[in-house]
Amino acid sequence: MKTLTIVFAMVTSSILSASSVYDHKVLDIDGNATTLKEYKGKVVLIVNVASKCGFTRQYKGLEELYSKYKEQGLVICGFPCNQFGGQEPGSEKEIKEFCSTKFGVTFPMYSKIKVKGEGIHPLYELLTGKNSPTKGSVKWNFTKILVNKTGNPIDRFGSLTSPSSSKLRKAIKKALEE
Image (cartoon, rainbow, N blue to C red; front, side, top):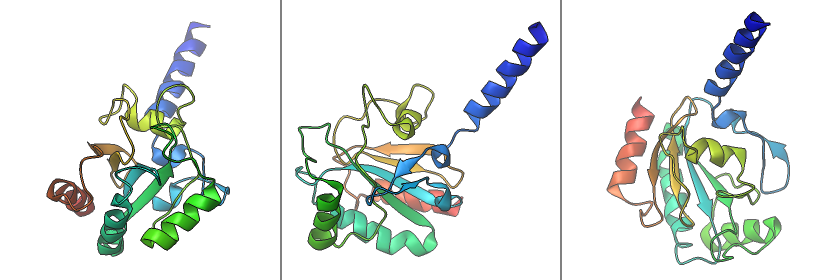
């Protein structure tokens, strides 16, 4: 029995340590079940977004960042969230239309999720949980979490960090070169 317990602990530990952003099921903006596995080997910037926020104009900068670096391997993933001041009240269809018509967004967008507290999506638990290098509760919309080519979070930038920030761009360039 003791051996079985040790083997179970080893397998469980192995599974937990192998967890990356690729392992979590998400819904795309059209409601289709998917994962982020297609981005293996790419640098991913995961952003909780909102359409009625003072930082909503960052969509423009995120799209410019995506356009500039996507050929080098950057993917930006937008995850709408309505947890901060109710600033993402629309349906996925409304969010998609808003992003494409108002800001010309072409980077991947996903369905609304919770990024903190009760009901937090497992992806954000991985990104912000106590064992993450980018740990800590998400404070507001447009928090940006940088994920390396192996699917592990490596850096985090708050809402006040603009997509044009030299600090953010340096971190992206460094991750793309590794």
